[in-house]
Length: 71
Image (cartoon, rainbow, N blue to C red; front, side):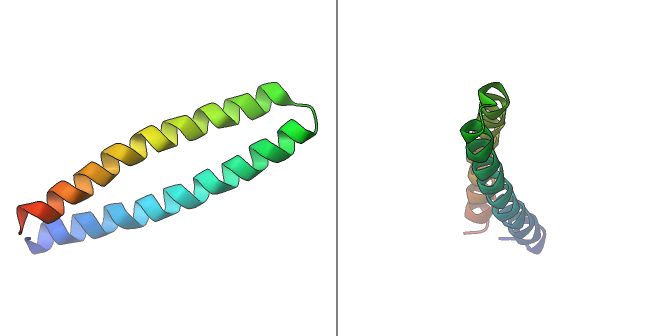
């Protein structure tokens, strides 16, 4: 792997870790909001989580691709 690809892969991996943390926080907030009766807002938060999950798959694929190029 080139140094540039390694740097990009490492940066993407850190962004994924951050994205996972944000996702976990949104999930907890959505649960808390739903328990208080604001189900529409909680549903919107869950929709945002689905987008994060979908994008996570693409980011993980990119990381694997960058790391395989140097192998």
